[in-house]
Every structure is written in C-alpha cells, then in structure tokens.
Image (tube, rainbow, N blue to C red; front, side, top):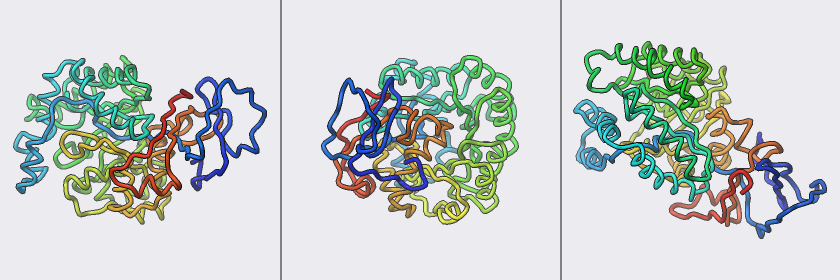
Length: 385
C-alpha cells in the first residue's frame, strides 16, 4: 500500500521489532532475522490496519426519533432548525459524565476494531462549551487507554451554535477562537481543529477565523465542507494547508483545484450520503483527474451516519460512488493516514512504520469491498502485538 498501486506480494512476510516494521516483502528476499516468535498466517492476506479518519464516536444519547421523522419526510435542515440535530445531541452530551461518554463510545469503538481498524479519529463538537468540549476530548483520549488502538482527536467546537449564543453567532466564534482553542491547545487534547462550513453551520468568514486561530496555536486544520451546498469551504481550507476536506457532494472545480495544489485529502462519507438519501454525488472523476487523494470514513455519528464498519464503507464507496476496489482499499489505509497527517507513521507496510496489521481470511483483496455483512478478519495486530 505504499503506492502508486496496491503493491501485492505473494508468499510474503512482515517482520517487526519494538512495534515497528523492520521488513515487509517477499519472504525469499528477507534479510537474516533472529525471530523471537514466528506466526504462520497460512496463506491469508495481510494489509495495513484500517484507518477511520472521520468519526464523531463520543456523544451522549441517540437520534433514533429523528430517523423516524426523516422517514416521514422531514429534512435534515428542518429538523436542525426546529431544535433537533446537533443541538439535540449537545443536551445529551452535556448531561453525560465523562465516564458515561467513555463507556458508550467503547461499544462503537469495539465494532470498528472488530472490522480491522487500528487507528480511529474522534471529533468533539457536541459539547459546544469549553468545559464540555474538553470533557469530550478527554473521553476520546481515554478510549486509547482502554483499548489497543491509536486515537486521534479533533476539536470541532464550530459544529453548531449552542442555544446560549443563538443570537450572537460571531460571539460564539469569539469564544472558540479566544478561549476554547487556546485552552485545548495548552492541555494537549486535540491533534487538529475542524469546523462545519455550511448554511446551517458557520459562514466562510467565521470558519476562516476558526482555522486561523487553530494555525496560530500550532494545530493542523480540516473541514466539513460542501455537504449540503457549495460555500467554498474546501478552497478556504486548502489555502490554509488543511489535512482534509470532508463530505464534498457540492465541491466545485475551484475547490478541486485548490485541494490539488495543497495536497488536501478528499474524505468521502458514503454512510451519511446513504443515510440521508442524498442524490448528488461527490465529483469523483474530477477528483481523480486532478490527482486529489481520496479517503473513506464512517462519519460515525448519532444523527446522519450511525455506522461502525469500514468494510461496509468500502462497499458503499464502490457501489454508491463507483470507486474501484484499489481506490477503496487505499481510501481506508494510506490516504486515510494522510488525512490525519500520519502518512509517515501508518497506512502502509513499510520499514519504520508502526506494525499495525489486519489479517484476512480471503482469496483476493476484492472480497474486502465486495461482501456485505461479512467480516473475514482473522486477526488484528497493533504495534506488533
């Protein structure tokens, strides 16, 4: 998975020491190794551990009632403007203790890990106050203490406007920029800063302030962009060197060109596309032609993508977005790593990288994308163990 192709190796081996890969390739070409332990995978396939680069795994409550409302014809925007949506989850998250948030998120994390995930990004964004956002980020960090998995955290205070700032959106942006980001950066709770640039979220000007504040505090940025309309968010983020721009159904040519210039990853979220019955596809062919790397992720969240399977995400990426098998596999490994700023550390089987592996009971890689409701994971290895 080091590119530009999958790099398939028959009769191969992976060797690790101290949690790092020291060799990956054909067995016949391996250097002399004094192995303390040898594991015979019996002809199974080994891939890098899967990476979920966009989730909202930590939250209180659920939004099953809103699902019923959408089935009855209500739109996501109508529900949000009526006090549902993100603000509904905000109330449940504020009411939850940190311990409860950890316990509820672990069930979702376990499902992702059972599908072969070894790295999971977790966003805040349901607390919408400094204390509650920090509570969410602490809970996310604790997930990595409870399970053998790498947790990457993103601060998403600019997810929605809390009720106490309903009449003063710019005042809430001030709170994010002047109080939340400095406090979270000082506490070391976030690996990046995200925002929701949308008609029901934050304007491009407000989003720019958030991203600039993040950069001023040494934090990488990423963005929810062009999901429901074209606000120019992807280009705005790309100019600031964003790691990724996510969703992108309404992405235009200017945004694609900006992302290509900056190396910003296009993270597509077919679970939300499916769950919200969207019909406008992301501009896949234009992204391909521009050489923009494409990642896939679950967008696991209570309102628009209650999905905890990267295997299903790959199938959706192929069936809904017409991605190839190779593109889907790259999208949850090396391109997902790049979307987190971790391409130097994970996402491919290369010497020096973390020995994070998924071992599969399959005959060919296409099975990982082709099957639905079938999990062929034989074993999951994280940092060599």
